[in-house]
Length: 229
Image 1: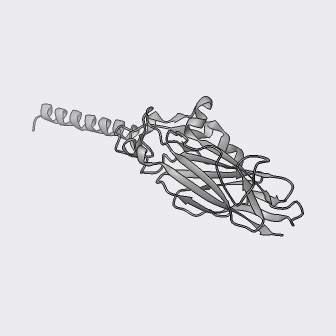
Image 2: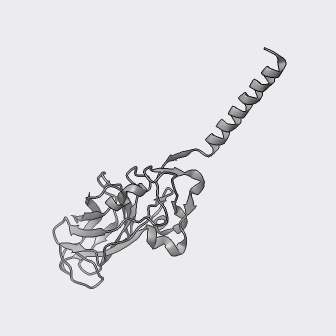
Image 3: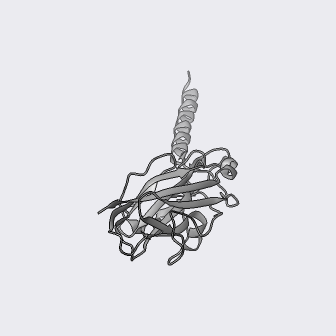
């Protein structure tokens, strides 16, 4: 083999290494696919009591009972994901939330370079929130302790729920049970305890693709429980 041929092979080898390096630097990995015309519709939320004397309303000062639907439904949401949360206030910190795009509408692979932080003005397009109010059914009832989520039922494929109370928060991933994090240390028959559930279409879920987004309608029901003092 002559020197000219060797030089050609060497140049070709170097070019292949460069191409491989470029491909690696722009590689993608499984998060979500979406475009700016895609949204999930039809989220419906119901809160239920799973403890004696514990009642719930979907409005402050409203009618309390053992089961309450959210005071609004049918949220239209774009897929999203969030950075690691360390405290309850992170849930509503817009800078913690982001979205991105894939090259293939049938794939849940996000192109890393398309990752963008959600804008303040658009937060409610990615995260829906519903607030319920909890108390005991009698002003003279003995206080109950450790209000928490005891069960969450999802009918859809990729919607996650984050529950936030005055003393704690818990995220429940579709298909997994709650861990029992305390949302409020005490529930009385006098003061209402607000519990807000935040819902989002999980971009980390492989079901979240442009082709499948119309199938991600969800009905979410969750139960709140507390312990006798």
